[in-house]
Length: 497
Image (tube, rainbow, N blue to C red):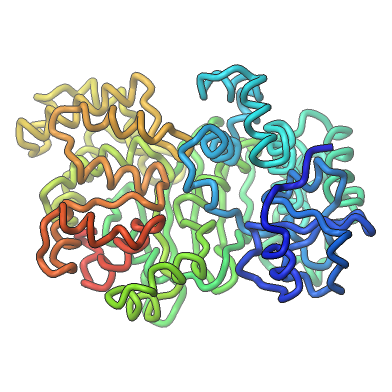
């Protein structure tokens, strides 16, 4: 049995007594007398303090022998950005596990990617999280499986395969351990399943179209997310619908292991609706993780707002847009290349240059949209080929160098070693602090990244220098990235963010 989390029990128990939703997703209470774990806001009777264990992950609760409460559904919570704050080994491991690294390469592959032994990785993660990397990956698969069980009519064997289980028997065993019931009993009747799951036929030959409801902590500023994408949407690559008075949506192709997947996102008050057309149903879990990163669904708006609202400059901005998120990306390499294309030009100009690159090197897909070119394809164009798109010689050289570094394997995703990635980016000729921090914010998902050299940010702070902006933002840690997003949005300059 893994050890319970070492934290301030009094603070944790007060959160449970007060049914405080601010701790949901960050804290789980496991009750010895019932064998069940809950979210702090569970409406059930408050357990006695001596019966409580506290953990930071659902996997740690399962590893300790507890199953999920059927009333408060702690397994259905959005993720937490708690581990995004940590650049250490455990934080990087959790982010990679969330991106499906263990499903692809196993725990041994995860350890190799992190440049540590499997034994050392196991020891560090258990000490900090209370569960092994394998247990964390199993819980992630079980949560995706339950999403598919509840929101589709797929046969259980297809659900098991799509969620990453190696056999139906393993699927049944893990689901019983996680939820205390066989998976078939978790499927609601048609009246409860909702319209999003109603018409999905069983997938044929691995391909499928499925619509899922991805939860997030309220509030969520869906209009701002759609506006951000719409301002940057490249014709042929992305589509964004912005209708006053109606929910907007965004649509694009996302590279997946089985081929090119088509995704459409429609933000809502309680969840984001994601329609996925995938060439292989095994791609669903990793795509869900990428979409959560793109739309920043794991943000904790109450926690972020509590810090930022202490600043008189930010307080009215947070009050006006309490659900503002930091849009990420579905492809870190693409984000980095597009950031270079946007250096020192307007968003409209960057969109034009990106459109030329996509037209020249993007690949057609069965979905009527183009796929952004791979870094190796951009590098193969050479400086002269990139200059033909209208880039300056210096910008073309930077883009070609960056594409080559990315093609060689530079990791800029959420599980990257941020210090190493920042240093590698800064070493590329033509890439300065603004580009490094912007990529760290949107591609790596560092919530404390702060592009202090950004002109709009410095204007919003009264025309200060970059050094003065850094000093001014010190009190916003560890959420300086969210502060930047509020300042960009408040200036009505999403085009320049």
